[in-house]
Amino acid sequence: MMMNKMLGLAFAALLLAPVAANAADAPKAFDKCKACHKVEAGKHGVGPSLAGVYGTKAGTNYPDFKYSPAHTASGVTWDDATLTKYLENPKGVIPGNRMVFAGFKDEADAKAVIEYLKTLKK
Ligand code: HEC
Image 1 (cartoon, rainbow, N blue to C red):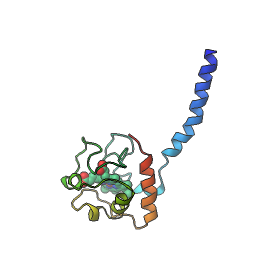
Image 2: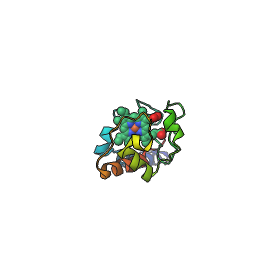
Image 3: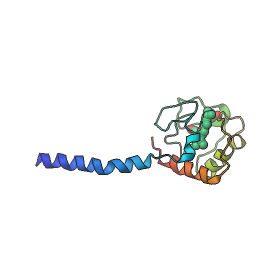
Image 4: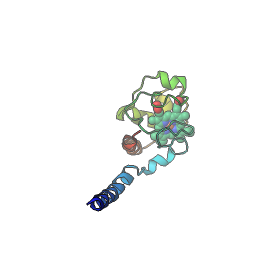
Protein backbone atom coordinates (compact mmCIF):
# COMPACT_ATOMS: atom_id res chain seq x y z
CA MET A 1 0.00 0.00 0.00
CA MET A 2 2.70 2.46 1.10
CA MET A 3 4.80 1.45 -1.91
CA ASN A 4 1.91 2.12 -4.26
CA LYS A 5 1.50 5.60 -2.84
CA MET A 6 5.18 6.37 -3.38
CA LEU A 7 5.09 5.12 -6.96
CA GLY A 8 2.03 7.24 -7.54
CA LEU A 9 3.84 10.33 -6.27
CA ALA A 10 6.89 9.62 -8.41
CA PHE A 11 4.66 9.21 -11.46
CA ALA A 12 2.87 12.50 -10.70
CA ALA A 13 6.24 14.26 -10.45
CA LEU A 14 7.26 12.88 -13.85
CA LEU A 15 4.04 14.14 -15.39
CA LEU A 16 4.46 17.61 -13.89
CA ALA A 17 8.10 18.08 -14.83
CA PRO A 18 7.64 18.82 -18.57
CA VAL A 19 4.92 21.38 -17.79
CA ALA A 20 7.25 23.27 -15.46
CA ALA A 21 10.00 23.22 -18.10
CA ASN A 22 7.65 24.67 -20.73
CA ALA A 23 6.66 27.57 -18.50
CA ALA A 24 10.32 28.54 -18.21
CA ASP A 25 11.10 28.47 -21.95
CA ALA A 26 12.31 31.95 -22.85
CA PRO A 27 11.44 33.44 -26.26
CA LYS A 28 14.37 34.23 -28.55
CA ALA A 29 13.83 37.96 -28.01
CA PHE A 30 14.65 37.51 -24.32
CA ASP A 31 18.31 36.81 -25.27
CA LYS A 32 18.72 40.60 -25.37
CA CYS A 33 17.78 40.88 -21.70
CA LYS A 34 19.92 38.07 -20.33
CA ALA A 35 23.12 40.11 -20.20
CA CYS A 36 21.62 42.14 -17.36
CA HIS A 37 18.62 40.24 -15.98
CA LYS A 38 18.24 36.90 -14.27
CA VAL A 39 14.89 35.15 -14.01
CA GLU A 40 15.58 33.36 -10.71
CA ALA A 41 13.83 35.11 -7.83
CA GLY A 42 16.13 37.43 -5.89
CA LYS A 43 19.17 36.98 -8.18
CA HIS A 44 20.28 40.32 -9.57
CA GLY A 45 22.78 41.23 -12.26
CA VAL A 46 23.31 44.70 -13.68
CA GLY A 47 19.52 44.85 -13.56
CA PRO A 48 17.13 43.40 -10.97
CA SER A 49 15.75 39.85 -11.14
CA LEU A 50 12.62 39.84 -13.30
CA ALA A 51 10.83 37.13 -11.31
CA GLY A 52 7.49 38.46 -10.12
CA VAL A 53 7.96 41.87 -11.77
CA TYR A 54 4.71 41.79 -13.79
CA GLY A 55 2.00 43.75 -11.99
CA THR A 56 4.37 45.54 -9.58
CA LYS A 57 5.22 49.24 -9.41
CA ALA A 58 8.57 50.18 -10.94
CA GLY A 59 11.36 49.90 -8.41
CA THR A 60 9.39 48.04 -5.72
CA ASN A 61 9.75 44.36 -6.67
CA TYR A 62 13.12 43.90 -4.94
CA PRO A 63 13.84 46.48 -2.21
CA ASP A 64 17.40 45.10 -1.93
CA PHE A 65 18.18 46.17 -5.53
CA LYS A 66 19.53 49.68 -6.02
CA TYR A 67 17.08 51.12 -8.53
CA SER A 68 17.75 54.62 -9.80
CA PRO A 69 15.72 57.37 -8.09
CA ALA A 70 14.13 58.18 -11.47
CA HIS A 71 12.95 54.60 -11.84
CA THR A 72 11.43 54.37 -8.36
CA ALA A 73 9.81 57.80 -8.58
CA SER A 74 8.19 57.09 -11.96
CA GLY A 75 5.03 55.62 -10.45
CA VAL A 76 4.71 53.29 -13.45
CA THR A 77 2.93 49.97 -12.86
CA TRP A 78 4.12 47.10 -15.04
CA ASP A 79 1.26 45.85 -17.19
CA ASP A 80 1.02 45.03 -20.90
CA ALA A 81 0.68 48.66 -21.99
CA THR A 82 3.51 50.12 -19.88
CA LEU A 83 5.89 47.22 -20.55
CA THR A 84 5.29 47.41 -24.31
CA LYS A 85 6.21 51.11 -24.32
CA TYR A 86 9.13 50.60 -21.92
CA LEU A 87 10.66 47.75 -23.94
CA GLU A 88 10.39 49.79 -27.13
CA ASN A 89 11.97 52.87 -25.54
CA PRO A 90 13.12 52.59 -21.88
CA LYS A 91 14.47 56.12 -21.63
CA GLY A 92 11.38 57.55 -23.30
CA VAL A 93 9.08 56.04 -20.67
CA ILE A 94 11.31 56.73 -17.66
CA PRO A 95 13.83 59.49 -18.40
CA GLY A 96 16.97 59.06 -16.29
CA ASN A 97 16.53 55.34 -15.65
CA ARG A 98 19.65 53.18 -15.81
CA MET A 99 18.50 50.43 -18.15
CA VAL A 100 20.76 50.64 -21.20
CA PHE A 101 18.65 48.97 -23.86
CA ALA A 102 17.97 50.52 -27.26
CA GLY A 103 14.46 49.06 -27.40
CA PHE A 104 12.68 46.49 -29.55
CA LYS A 105 11.84 47.69 -33.04
CA ASP A 106 9.28 44.95 -33.52
CA GLU A 107 6.27 45.00 -31.19
CA ALA A 108 5.98 41.20 -31.55
CA ASP A 109 9.31 40.86 -29.71
CA ALA A 110 8.05 43.02 -26.85
CA LYS A 111 4.82 40.99 -26.71
CA ALA A 112 6.65 37.66 -26.60
CA VAL A 113 8.90 38.88 -23.80
CA ILE A 114 5.96 40.28 -21.79
CA GLU A 115 4.08 36.96 -22.03
CA TYR A 116 7.25 35.30 -20.75
CA LEU A 117 7.60 37.78 -17.88
CA LYS A 118 4.08 36.84 -16.75
CA THR A 119 5.23 33.25 -16.19
CA LEU A 120 8.11 34.27 -13.91
CA LYS A 121 6.80 33.96 -10.39
CA LYS A 122 8.68 34.71 -7.19
C1 HEC B 1 22.43 46.73 -20.14
C2 HEC B 1 21.62 46.13 -19.10
C3 HEC B 1 20.15 45.87 -19.33
C4 HEC B 1 19.54 45.27 -20.41
C5 HEC B 1 20.17 44.77 -21.70
C6 HEC B 1 18.14 45.17 -20.07
N1 HEC B 1 17.91 45.72 -18.83
FE1 HEC B 1 16.10 45.84 -17.87
N2 HEC B 1 16.96 46.91 -16.39
C7 HEC B 1 18.31 47.19 -16.26
C8 HEC B 1 18.52 48.04 -15.10
C9 HEC B 1 19.87 48.57 -14.60
C10 HEC B 1 17.25 48.27 -14.54
C11 HEC B 1 16.92 49.16 -13.34
C12 HEC B 1 16.73 50.57 -13.90
C13 HEC B 1 16.84 51.69 -12.90
O1 HEC B 1 16.88 51.43 -11.68
O2 HEC B 1 16.92 52.85 -13.35
C14 HEC B 1 16.28 47.53 -15.36
C15 HEC B 1 14.92 47.48 -15.11
C16 HEC B 1 14.03 46.67 -15.77
C17 HEC B 1 12.64 46.46 -15.41
C18 HEC B 1 11.92 47.08 -14.23
C19 HEC B 1 12.22 46.26 -12.98
C20 HEC B 1 11.51 46.72 -11.73
O3 HEC B 1 11.56 45.96 -10.72
O4 HEC B 1 10.91 47.81 -11.71
C21 HEC B 1 12.12 45.58 -16.30
C22 HEC B 1 10.70 45.03 -16.33
C23 HEC B 1 13.18 45.25 -17.24
N3 HEC B 1 14.31 45.93 -16.89
C24 HEC B 1 13.04 44.37 -18.29
C25 HEC B 1 14.01 44.16 -19.27
C26 HEC B 1 13.80 43.34 -20.43
C27 HEC B 1 12.55 42.53 -20.71
C28 HEC B 1 14.96 43.42 -21.18
C29 HEC B 1 15.22 42.81 -22.53
C30 HEC B 1 14.36 43.25 -23.60
C31 HEC B 1 15.88 44.28 -20.46
N4 HEC B 1 15.27 44.70 -19.31
C32 HEC B 1 17.18 44.60 -20.88
C33 HEC B 1 19.30 46.75 -17.11
C34 HEC B 1 19.11 46.15 -18.34
